[in-house]
Length: 290
Image (tube, rainbow, N blue to C red; front, side):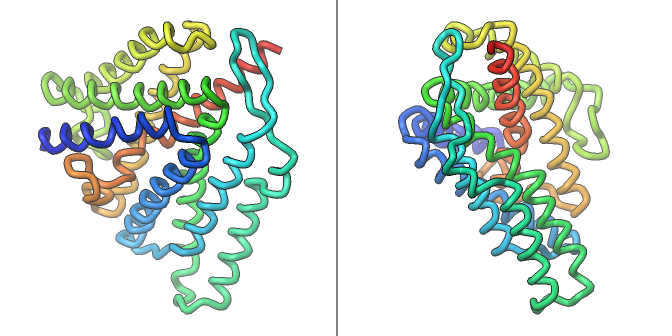
Protein backbone atom coordinates (compact mmCIF):
# COMPACT_ATOMS: atom_id res chain seq x y z
CA UNK A 1 0.00 0.00 0.00
CA UNK A 2 2.80 2.43 0.87
CA UNK A 3 4.62 1.68 -2.40
CA UNK A 4 1.46 2.28 -4.43
CA UNK A 5 0.86 5.49 -2.50
CA UNK A 6 4.37 6.76 -3.23
CA UNK A 7 4.30 5.78 -6.92
CA UNK A 8 0.94 7.46 -7.46
CA UNK A 9 2.17 10.63 -5.78
CA UNK A 10 5.38 10.55 -7.82
CA UNK A 11 3.33 10.63 -11.02
CA UNK A 12 0.61 13.09 -9.99
CA UNK A 13 2.57 15.73 -8.06
CA UNK A 14 4.90 16.81 -10.93
CA UNK A 15 1.92 16.93 -13.29
CA UNK A 16 -0.11 19.09 -10.90
CA UNK A 17 2.80 21.42 -10.16
CA UNK A 18 3.59 21.87 -13.85
CA UNK A 19 -0.05 22.63 -14.64
CA UNK A 20 -0.41 25.20 -11.87
CA UNK A 21 2.88 26.96 -12.61
CA UNK A 22 2.98 27.03 -16.41
CA UNK A 23 -0.55 26.56 -17.70
CA UNK A 24 -2.88 29.55 -18.27
CA UNK A 25 -5.76 30.04 -15.85
CA UNK A 26 -8.24 28.61 -18.36
CA UNK A 27 -6.35 25.30 -18.44
CA UNK A 28 -6.07 25.21 -14.64
CA UNK A 29 -9.81 25.86 -14.45
CA UNK A 30 -10.57 23.02 -16.86
CA UNK A 31 -8.27 20.66 -14.94
CA UNK A 32 -9.81 21.65 -11.59
CA UNK A 33 -13.29 21.18 -13.06
CA UNK A 34 -12.41 17.66 -14.22
CA UNK A 35 -11.06 16.86 -10.76
CA UNK A 36 -14.16 18.14 -9.00
CA UNK A 37 -16.46 16.26 -11.40
CA UNK A 38 -14.68 13.01 -10.60
CA UNK A 39 -14.94 13.77 -6.89
CA UNK A 40 -18.58 14.75 -7.37
CA UNK A 41 -19.41 11.40 -8.96
CA UNK A 42 -17.76 9.65 -6.01
CA UNK A 43 -19.67 11.84 -3.56
CA UNK A 44 -22.98 10.98 -5.24
CA UNK A 45 -21.98 7.30 -5.31
CA UNK A 46 -21.44 7.45 -1.54
CA UNK A 47 -24.88 9.01 -1.20
CA UNK A 48 -26.42 6.32 -3.39
CA UNK A 49 -24.72 3.65 -1.29
CA UNK A 50 -26.43 5.22 1.72
CA UNK A 51 -29.79 5.17 -0.04
CA UNK A 52 -29.86 8.70 -1.49
CA UNK A 53 -29.82 8.84 -5.28
CA UNK A 54 -28.72 12.30 -6.40
CA UNK A 55 -29.17 14.09 -9.70
CA UNK A 56 -25.85 13.35 -11.39
CA UNK A 57 -26.26 15.18 -14.68
CA UNK A 58 -27.91 18.31 -13.30
CA UNK A 59 -25.54 18.57 -10.33
CA UNK A 60 -22.56 18.09 -12.62
CA UNK A 61 -23.83 20.81 -14.97
CA UNK A 62 -24.21 23.23 -12.05
CA UNK A 63 -20.72 22.31 -10.84
CA UNK A 64 -19.27 23.23 -14.24
CA UNK A 65 -21.22 26.50 -14.14
CA UNK A 66 -19.79 27.35 -10.70
CA UNK A 67 -16.22 26.83 -11.89
CA UNK A 68 -16.86 28.83 -15.05
CA UNK A 69 -18.27 31.66 -12.93
CA UNK A 70 -15.25 31.59 -10.63
CA UNK A 71 -12.97 31.74 -13.66
CA UNK A 72 -14.87 34.72 -15.04
CA UNK A 73 -14.53 36.46 -11.68
CA UNK A 74 -10.77 36.06 -11.73
CA UNK A 75 -9.67 37.09 -15.22
CA UNK A 76 -9.98 40.87 -15.08
CA UNK A 77 -9.49 43.90 -12.87
CA UNK A 78 -6.58 43.60 -10.45
CA UNK A 79 -5.19 45.98 -7.87
CA UNK A 80 -1.62 46.14 -6.69
CA UNK A 81 -0.89 45.70 -3.00
CA UNK A 82 2.29 46.43 -1.11
CA UNK A 83 5.15 44.26 -2.29
CA UNK A 84 3.59 43.79 -5.72
CA UNK A 85 0.84 41.43 -4.57
CA UNK A 86 -2.13 41.46 -6.94
CA UNK A 87 -5.74 41.13 -5.81
CA UNK A 88 -8.26 40.19 -8.46
CA UNK A 89 -11.62 41.91 -8.33
CA UNK A 90 -14.88 40.79 -9.90
CA UNK A 91 -15.19 42.05 -13.50
CA UNK A 92 -18.39 43.46 -14.90
CA UNK A 93 -18.65 40.51 -17.28
CA UNK A 94 -19.09 38.19 -14.28
CA UNK A 95 -22.13 40.03 -12.97
CA UNK A 96 -24.42 37.96 -15.18
CA UNK A 97 -22.94 34.72 -13.83
CA UNK A 98 -23.11 34.83 -10.04
CA UNK A 99 -22.91 31.88 -7.66
CA UNK A 100 -26.31 32.91 -6.28
CA UNK A 101 -27.83 32.68 -9.76
CA UNK A 102 -26.38 29.21 -10.28
CA UNK A 103 -27.71 28.00 -6.94
CA UNK A 104 -31.13 29.40 -7.83
CA UNK A 105 -30.96 27.64 -11.20
CA UNK A 106 -30.03 24.43 -9.37
CA UNK A 107 -33.08 24.73 -7.13
CA UNK A 108 -35.37 25.38 -10.11
CA UNK A 109 -33.86 22.51 -12.08
CA UNK A 110 -34.08 20.13 -9.12
CA UNK A 111 -37.71 21.14 -8.68
CA UNK A 112 -38.35 20.22 -12.31
CA UNK A 113 -36.64 16.85 -11.81
CA UNK A 114 -38.76 16.12 -8.75
CA UNK A 115 -42.02 17.16 -10.41
CA UNK A 116 -41.48 15.74 -13.89
CA UNK A 117 -38.67 13.18 -13.52
CA UNK A 118 -38.94 9.42 -13.38
CA UNK A 119 -37.56 8.94 -9.89
CA UNK A 120 -40.06 7.73 -7.27
CA UNK A 121 -41.45 10.55 -5.17
CA UNK A 122 -40.11 8.79 -2.07
CA UNK A 123 -36.58 9.57 -3.29
CA UNK A 124 -37.19 13.30 -3.70
CA UNK A 125 -35.86 14.47 -0.35
CA UNK A 126 -32.82 12.19 -0.45
CA UNK A 127 -31.90 13.15 -4.01
CA UNK A 128 -32.27 16.85 -3.34
CA UNK A 129 -30.29 16.57 -0.10
CA UNK A 130 -27.27 14.73 -1.47
CA UNK A 131 -27.10 16.86 -4.62
CA UNK A 132 -27.32 20.07 -2.60
CA UNK A 133 -24.68 18.80 -0.19
CA UNK A 134 -22.38 18.01 -3.12
CA UNK A 135 -22.53 21.60 -4.35
CA UNK A 136 -22.25 23.24 -0.91
CA UNK A 137 -19.71 21.00 0.79
CA UNK A 138 -17.59 20.02 -2.22
CA UNK A 139 -17.95 22.05 -5.40
CA UNK A 140 -18.24 25.59 -4.08
CA UNK A 141 -15.37 25.48 -1.53
CA UNK A 142 -13.07 23.63 -3.93
CA UNK A 143 -13.71 26.29 -6.60
CA UNK A 144 -11.50 28.60 -4.51
CA UNK A 145 -8.52 27.04 -6.31
CA UNK A 146 -9.67 28.87 -9.45
CA UNK A 147 -9.85 32.19 -7.63
CA UNK A 148 -6.38 31.68 -6.19
CA UNK A 149 -4.88 30.79 -9.56
CA UNK A 150 -6.57 33.78 -11.19
CA UNK A 151 -4.62 36.31 -9.12
CA UNK A 152 -1.63 35.93 -11.41
CA UNK A 153 1.94 34.99 -10.49
CA UNK A 154 1.23 35.60 -6.80
CA UNK A 155 -1.87 33.44 -7.08
CA UNK A 156 0.12 30.60 -8.58
CA UNK A 157 2.51 30.83 -5.68
CA UNK A 158 -0.36 30.78 -3.18
CA UNK A 159 -2.06 27.86 -4.92
CA UNK A 160 1.16 25.83 -4.96
CA UNK A 161 1.72 26.84 -1.34
CA UNK A 162 -1.75 25.50 -0.47
CA UNK A 163 -1.14 22.25 -2.33
CA UNK A 164 2.28 21.70 -0.77
CA UNK A 165 1.15 22.41 2.80
CA UNK A 166 -1.65 19.85 2.35
CA UNK A 167 0.69 17.28 0.79
CA UNK A 168 3.43 17.70 3.38
CA UNK A 169 0.95 17.71 6.23
CA UNK A 170 -0.79 14.57 4.98
CA UNK A 171 2.54 12.78 4.47
CA UNK A 172 3.78 13.72 7.94
CA UNK A 173 0.51 12.60 9.52
CA UNK A 174 0.58 9.31 7.63
CA UNK A 175 4.07 8.25 8.66
CA UNK A 176 4.03 9.68 12.20
CA UNK A 177 0.61 8.22 12.86
CA UNK A 178 1.68 4.80 11.63
CA UNK A 179 4.94 4.79 13.59
CA UNK A 180 4.19 6.40 16.95
CA UNK A 181 0.47 7.18 16.92
CA UNK A 182 -1.24 6.02 20.15
CA UNK A 183 -4.07 8.41 20.97
CA UNK A 184 -7.01 8.07 18.63
CA UNK A 185 -8.29 11.37 17.31
CA UNK A 186 -11.75 10.37 16.08
CA UNK A 187 -12.19 6.61 16.51
CA UNK A 188 -15.79 6.66 15.33
CA UNK A 189 -15.07 8.52 12.09
CA UNK A 190 -11.51 7.43 11.26
CA UNK A 191 -9.96 4.83 13.60
CA UNK A 192 -6.46 5.18 12.13
CA UNK A 193 -6.13 8.92 12.72
CA UNK A 194 -4.21 9.89 15.85
CA UNK A 195 -3.47 13.10 17.71
CA UNK A 196 0.22 12.50 17.11
CA UNK A 197 -0.45 12.36 13.39
CA UNK A 198 -2.60 15.48 13.57
CA UNK A 199 0.17 17.36 15.38
CA UNK A 200 2.71 16.23 12.77
CA UNK A 201 0.28 17.35 10.08
CA UNK A 202 0.08 20.86 11.56
CA UNK A 203 3.82 21.11 12.19
CA UNK A 204 4.56 20.01 8.63
CA UNK A 205 2.33 22.73 7.20
CA UNK A 206 3.87 25.41 9.41
CA UNK A 207 7.34 24.33 8.31
CA UNK A 208 6.20 24.72 4.71
CA UNK A 209 5.19 28.30 5.51
CA UNK A 210 8.54 29.06 7.15
CA UNK A 211 10.42 27.72 4.14
CA UNK A 212 8.09 29.36 1.61
CA UNK A 213 8.41 32.84 3.12
CA UNK A 214 11.61 33.33 1.10
CA UNK A 215 9.65 32.60 -2.06
CA UNK A 216 6.28 34.20 -1.32
CA UNK A 217 7.71 37.57 -0.37
CA UNK A 218 4.38 39.32 -1.01
CA UNK A 219 2.94 37.93 2.23
CA UNK A 220 4.56 38.72 5.61
CA UNK A 221 5.90 35.58 7.28
CA UNK A 222 3.63 35.85 10.32
CA UNK A 223 0.60 35.88 8.05
CA UNK A 224 1.98 33.05 5.95
CA UNK A 225 2.38 30.92 9.08
CA UNK A 226 -1.12 31.82 10.29
CA UNK A 227 -2.51 31.07 6.85
CA UNK A 228 -0.83 27.67 6.79
CA UNK A 229 -1.98 26.78 10.31
CA UNK A 230 -5.60 27.74 9.66
CA UNK A 231 -5.62 26.01 6.28
CA UNK A 232 -4.15 22.89 7.85
CA UNK A 233 -6.77 22.78 10.59
CA UNK A 234 -9.51 23.30 8.00
CA UNK A 235 -7.96 20.59 5.84
CA UNK A 236 -7.89 18.10 8.68
CA UNK A 237 -11.53 18.93 9.40
CA UNK A 238 -12.31 18.33 5.73
CA UNK A 239 -10.57 14.97 5.91
CA UNK A 240 -12.69 13.95 8.90
CA UNK A 241 -15.82 15.29 7.24
CA UNK A 242 -15.21 13.09 4.22
CA UNK A 243 -14.62 10.16 6.56
CA UNK A 244 -18.05 10.80 8.05
CA UNK A 245 -19.59 10.55 4.56
CA UNK A 246 -17.97 7.18 3.96
CA UNK A 247 -18.72 5.94 7.47
CA UNK A 248 -22.41 6.79 7.12
CA UNK A 249 -22.50 4.75 3.91
CA UNK A 250 -20.39 1.88 5.26
CA UNK A 251 -17.55 2.50 2.79
CA UNK A 252 -13.77 2.52 3.33
CA UNK A 253 -12.72 4.60 0.29
CA UNK A 254 -14.64 6.93 -2.01
CA UNK A 255 -13.29 5.03 -5.02
CA UNK A 256 -10.33 3.16 -6.52
CA UNK A 257 -9.18 5.68 -9.12
CA UNK A 258 -5.83 6.47 -7.46
CA UNK A 259 -3.85 3.39 -6.32
CA UNK A 260 -2.82 3.71 -2.69
CA UNK A 261 -4.96 6.80 -2.19
CA UNK A 262 -8.48 5.59 -2.90
CA UNK A 263 -10.69 7.86 -4.96
CA UNK A 264 -10.37 11.45 -6.13
CA UNK A 265 -12.50 12.62 -3.21
CA UNK A 266 -10.10 10.90 -0.81
CA UNK A 267 -7.23 12.80 -2.41
CA UNK A 268 -8.74 16.30 -2.33
CA UNK A 269 -10.78 16.12 0.88
CA UNK A 270 -8.32 18.31 2.80
CA UNK A 271 -7.85 20.73 -0.09
CA UNK A 272 -11.62 21.29 -0.31
CA UNK A 273 -11.57 23.33 2.92
CA UNK A 274 -7.91 24.42 2.93
CA UNK A 275 -8.15 26.31 -0.39
CA UNK A 276 -11.01 28.65 0.62
CA UNK A 277 -9.25 29.42 3.91
CA UNK A 278 -6.16 30.60 2.00
CA UNK A 279 -8.31 32.58 -0.42
CA UNK A 280 -10.35 34.37 2.23
CA UNK A 281 -7.31 34.97 4.42
CA UNK A 282 -5.66 36.56 1.40
CA UNK A 283 -8.69 38.81 0.87
CA UNK A 284 -8.73 39.78 4.54
CA UNK A 285 -5.03 40.60 4.39
CA UNK A 286 -5.50 42.59 1.20
CA UNK A 287 -8.30 44.62 2.75
CA UNK A 288 -6.12 45.45 5.75
CA UNK A 289 -3.47 46.97 3.49
CA UNK A 290 -5.93 49.48 2.06
